[in-house]
Length: 345
Ligand code: TLP
Image 1 (cartoon, rainbow, N blue to C red):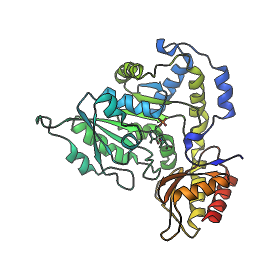
Image 2: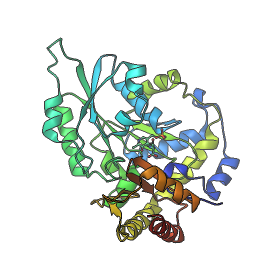
Image 3: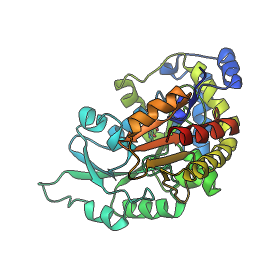
């Protein structure tokens, strides 16, 4: 059975244009800095983020980890959201590998952190009881807050606050191009207030592997060593970077289509009695839904019944699901999903 896979946009297979570019890619040893395709991708990525330099890394997780390990030393502290990907879903890597202490603040439903909370979390640097506050992390779009975009105005305010306090600001921009599409601004505007940004090529942009960490030349030069320590120095990796170039050239401009389908999906599901949709402003390609109170089932059972009908969704709680639209989800897939949900419920 061919599945309609809405579990994530990470499930996207490369497009035919990507496979062709991968087959033809010029390659070299990237640990020597000699892979022309990787070098081209890094240059394009840095330009699109408005930063001096970029570094290709195997995953978004490694991009965020390498950024934190470069900004922070052992015993330093990072301020981040309690629903942030770096806190929830990156294996505690910053603590396990870097001895970096996470200071979590409650994410508001729109994905932001209260500015006063950030200010209040900054430690007194002269008091030896405290870890040293070094970094703030934001996430755009914010995954667990519904795939919502964070505005440039808000990011600028956090940037100012961080600068005044002598802190660095990192953006987990895994889906920054989705945010740019819904806000109608260039990705560089969203990244302008931050020191460093990671974005993913392998989610809605469909590349099979890879993310790019961008920042100043001096910062990226330091990340090269950290990436090597993490085992992320790759060799003839131009075959993957070639797909990343296609992602930047051909895929960022179509993300609004995924957002439109997510809205249709959300509207269709909202009309089913027994299903409650968490509809939010500035949402992008994610739809979060819950089973209404009194519906005598749970998300694991619903997930299994939907799978029997060829639909894959992600259970993210005992009565909650996430559905993510992407390049391989067309209008017919949206209709079939709504129909299947309705029958199963
Ligand atoms: N997110 C995945 C899962 O890990 C939850 C998904 O299906 O959404 N930052 C953000 C905001 C992400 O959503 C993800 C992946 C990452 C970083 C990590 O990227 P990868 O998977 O490339 O390590």
